[in-house]
Length: 475
Ligand code: 4AD
Image: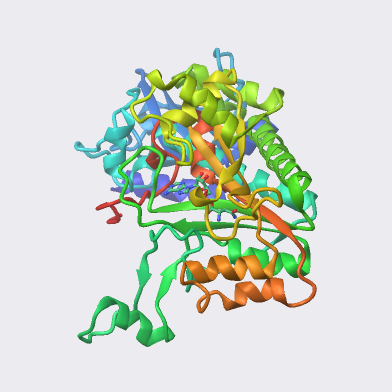
């Protein structure tokens, strides 16, 4: 006890005169011969009679710092993934794979001692579906913490792109009165009143009408674009689809953009150019800034690097829905569900199209009206076809959906009427009926699906900190 107290005292004494670095800046600045304090978790420990070598990592990067410490100074209980604080002098290292090491004078155990039933073992790569059982502990594993750093960087890269292109960031509401996509996959929101009543009536009681968690911020973005021209959001979206797939979540993040003054097939072309430019610029930025974390993942799934580099270096492929359907029907022997003209595409069809395109991303445009939502702009020359677009990525399938918006009030009114939406969405119709409305187009990119693509991760639940899906929302 006395020894521990003495150690703590000496660490605090030194800490007040030394700088506390995160390991990323420490390895970058390489302040040789300086007195330094670091905090981190033990990732490896080799004890020898006189000296011991402990690898620590603090999550600031995937890199570890080796601390060299007299074995007798290691407090009892230090072991795999215990947290420690160390103080010493940074020196150039002779060891392979590291440029510096900390010659440590004082080491303190911060958290409790190592416990026996800790679910993760040192130097063992656990399968992701095992790691997923411990959502609250997964940030402590190398692969998942790598993913989280890439996710953070990707979010920043998307925001930087929009900022550079003069898009205004809009916080669209989470509580809404509409089901933007019309798929009926909304979560109903209600207060927790201790009153007896039907689900719908409790929600209605609070707001005066049913309210839902948003499935998309698009309609609200359109309202903002009618005054600001170029807008975007980066929000959670919620869908009560109970599909237990590796591509769906009940709560996911969507990057949505809306741009005014886009019309006709040229407008749709500009929209696709925008999506392609956004993806290429932000993904390249992620590769540049998160090289090590990305390569940690690429090593686990070898074809990913080539897919991502092809997507970044080659133009995306464009085809109409009819062209895609012809191709699919010519190859219908490959599919479990036969492709049917007029129907939406299934995942197997989407994957076939990107593979057929030489593993390049594919835009599919000009969709049958009945496959898309009420807001899609009908073509001037064929009102059964809408100027919508889906972007398909190799190995993933659909990553983005969007298109031009119906800007003719009489047609929009008819669409809203025929779906019984007119009362709820009168405000949306106003955007077209009041002077000053301008034709616009936009898109939404599923952020988690984009991460699946860039990292080659197989399951969407492994690219979001706390995934929510059917029967899973407890942690
Ligand atoms: O194609 P979606 O439904 O398009 C919209 O929501 C439009 N209102 C967007 C817009 O134009 N502003 O969804 C866009 C993308 C999909 O392509 C997919 O990547 C992702 O959102 N997505 C999901 N991701 C994870 N889990 C789910 N349940 C998802 N549903 C859609």
